Length: 87
Image (cartoon, rainbow, N blue to C red):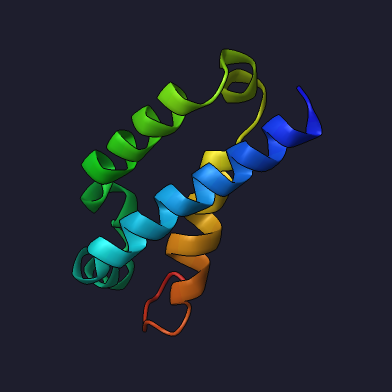
C-alpha cells in the first residue's frame, strides 16, 4: 500500500463518517443518550462501510481500520457534550 493510497483511504473514510454525522444528528444524539448508538446507526454505518469498500483496494480494506476509526473520531468523539451515562 502506498502512502498516497493510505492518505486517500483516510480522507474517504473521514468524508463518509462526516456525512453520516451530518445527516443523522438526531439519531446520534438519541443513540448516545440511550447507549445504543451502533444499533440505531447500523444501516447508515453499513451503507458507509459498503461505499468505502467499493472505493478502496481490497488490501486497504482488509489490512486497515480507517473506516472504523473515522466513525469513532467523527461520529462518537465529537459528541462528548451530549449527556450520557456512557461517559
